[in-house]
Length: 73
Figure (tube, rainbow, N blue to C red):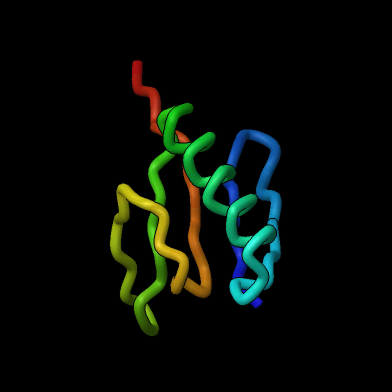
């Protein structure tokens, strides 16, 4: 079971999906594109303490984290 974790001002939300289910995979890709369009950064965990920023949906990623842009001032 794969997961997409979305961080925002209220904490985080978790979206689990079965990567072997075509419909669930399409929904996960749609969610990825929605958050990318909103300006969120996406990253996947490659190993312990190792994360990589991604710019395209990775259907093989077990965990994808989305976090919003930081706004300074």
